[in-house]
Image 1 (cartoon, rainbow, N blue to C red):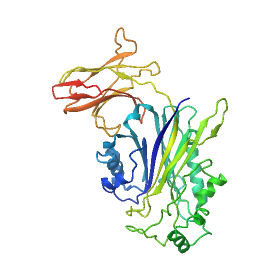
Image 2: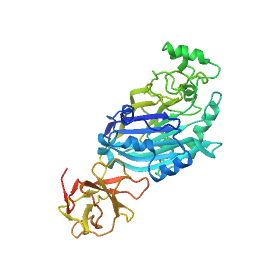
Image 3: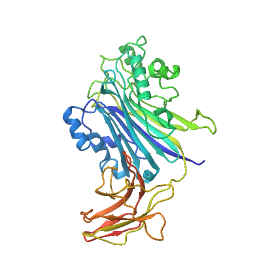
Image 4: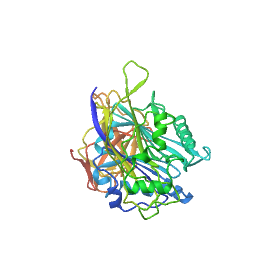
Length: 426
C-alpha cells in the first residue's frame, strides 16, 4: 500500500458574536501551505435575522475566508460548511485534491438544555480521501468550573448520536483520522489554583504546574472521554478569558486552555476486526494567536502532517470541446471508468475558472443516457443554450448526486468570448 503525506491546518476560535476582521488579519490566521484547511468557530452571531440571512446566502465568516484576497487566490475551494446555531465548521481543500475527495457527509448534535437547543453541541464533516476516511468535529461543550461531568457527558452524547451512511464507517470514531477541535471548555481542576496564582505562573511562563492540573489531559488519560486522542505540546498561555480588546486576563474567570485541537488516528490491521493506534499524525505547529483581541478567547491553530493511504482514484474524463456557439445547444462528451456507474441523478456543473466554492457553479445540467456508438462508457450531454452568458474562462465538473456533493471529474479550461466557446488545454 502506498502512503501519501499531506498537511491539514485546523483553526478554532470562539468569536463571541463579533464580525470577521479584515482580509489581511484573516489571512494571518491561516497557513496557506496546507493541503486542507478547516475552520471551526463558536458563538457566531445567531439571532433569527442572522440565521435567515446566512441560510439564503452565506455566513459572513465563511464568505470572508473564501474571498479572492484570502483563500481563493491561493487555490483553495470550499468543500462544505455546516452550522448549528452559533457553531460553524468550514472545510477547504487545494484544487489539486478535489477529485480525490469522496463521500462527503455532515452531522450535528445539540447538547444545550439537555439536547433541546443547539447553543452547545457539535457539528461534523466526514469524507474519504483516496484510501483514508477522515472526520472533522467542531464543538462547544458545557462551560464553567465544576462542570467537568457535563463536558464528559457532552462528548458521549456527540459520539453516540452522530451517524453516517458510509458502510463500516458509521460513527465518528470509526474513521481512520478524527480531528476534534473547538471550545471544549475544559478548565483547571477547581481545587488547584486561584485566579491570581494562575496569572502569576503565566506571567513567569511557568506553564507546567498548570498543565498538570488540566482537566482535558486527565480526562483523556483516565479514558473517561476522548479515549485514544492526542494533542500537540502546549507552549502557549491559557486562551480564556481575556478583557476585550486587550491581552489582560479577566479576573472574573480562572484562566484556562478552553480552546483545543486534538486528534485520533488509526490504521486497519489486516485480518483483525479491531483497529490499532499508530503514529500517522505529526505536529508541525500548535499555537494561539494572542494578537487577536476582539474576543475574550484567543484563536488556536494546529498544523499537522498526516499519512494518507495513497493510490489514484478513477475519475470521469471530458473530451475537449473545439467550438461552442452561444445561443445554440452545446455538447459535452464524458467517459466513465468502470468503477463509476452512470446515474440520472449525476449532473454537470459549470464553474468560472477561479471558483472558490463547490456551491458557486454558474449553471448545471442533469446527465442523460445518450451513449456514443463505438465508444464504451462514453456519453454525450446537451448543454442548454445561454447556459453561460458572461465571457471568461470556465471549467465543467462531473458531480455526485449526494449532498454535500463532490467532484468526480474536471474538464480542461474553456473560454467564452461571447459568440463561441473554445477549449484550451491545461
